[in-house]
Length: 252
Ligand SMILES: Nc1ncnc2c1ncn2[C@@H]1O[C@H](COP(=O)(O)OP(=O)(O)OP(=O)(O)O)[C@@H](O)[C@H]1O
Image: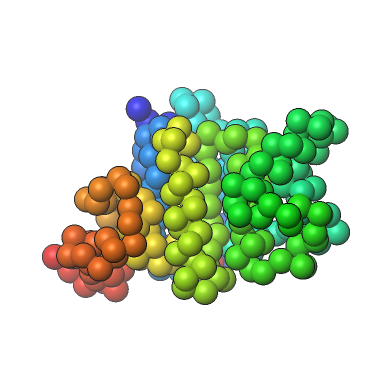
């Protein structure tokens, strides 16, 4: 069943995008529990679309719906992670994870326990009382993910969350993200520039081009992912097709 709907979205920013539409009559449906990656050249409108899903930007034309309801403001069951972990340096790791709760009131002992449990799940037990500056980049990304999951979002929006990490840490975080999403109850929209990352983590890959959807393909891989899949033929064929489309070449 469709959970997140972009219906005939068109958007122009004015001066910032030279008056050209960034998105032009784009429609896209994401099912409940589906993990969809958005790929596309820099500036094609991926973040614009994500901001619309988050209720941070209203499309000039068209409508975004979550569970059938029009999105007009930020929705409380949405979790977001940005490229930079955007942690508050003056708060401890635990208090950063608690931030979505703190914004609505004083955290209870149960909230603090829940934050610690999330940190433990992300391999960060023992780091709760540290400050973000005392953590590595990968650990900070894990804290940002734990924070996004704190209020058990139904929709997780990720904007290149692992872009600044080294290749192996990035792969570890991809695995952790897949485990976190394994229950299948959370719908995920994941922006990345990395074709292999998009294919590895997703049920479906959507490529944006010229303001619309250029490719919308299911990922034909078993739902239980294992790193060896990255070296197999179906994985590489799909990566090649996406790369050729992104380069403007003809898809095979
Ligand atoms: N607030 C804004 N004001 C004006 N123009 C903007 C604004 N935000 C984005 N743009 C422009 O809209 C276009 C799409 O931006 P967007 O950030 O959605 O692209 P993107 O696909 O996420 O890019 P990247 O992969 O580089 O992050 C770009 O040309 C950008 O310069």
